[in-house]
Amino acid sequence: MSDRVPSRTPPRVRVTAPRRGAPSGGGARSRLEDSVPLEEIYVRSLLRAQLRLALRCLGTVALLAVVVPLLFFVRPELAEVSVLGLPLAWVLLGVVSYPVLLGVGWWYLRGAERNEQDFADLVRRGPR
Image (tube, rainbow, N blue to C red; front, side):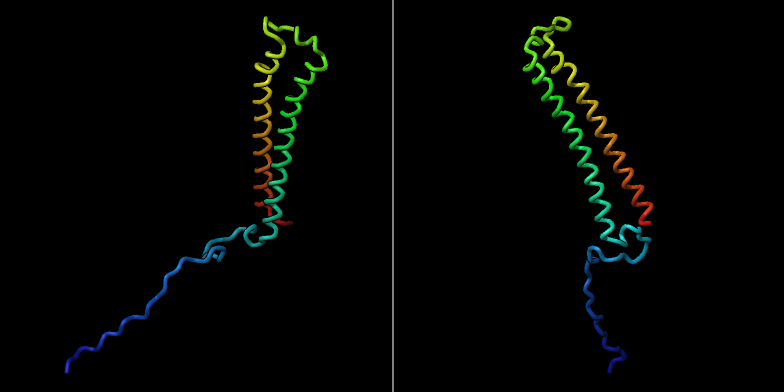
């Protein structure tokens, strides 16, 4: 007989990825992760604020885009006015409109950043 002990095969182990949404093995969790319904409220609030801001900016641009042609429709004599040798309509639509659009873009960017900062502050503070 032999002195060798018969070798046993180790049991098979199934390796899988962790489930999504399952708590991790360690590390601190934020207050926001602990309360899913509150997270949804916060995110919806941010989305509503961003939507209101976007609609205000869109309304401003649309109002300006409607007012200038309407002004020339109501006051046809304005079509004869020239500024620096250019018709007033060209000056308004080709020169003045671009700084206005840049201003509205700047206004939107500042407002969106402010909304996101308010959201981040709200998440850090957590529920009261």
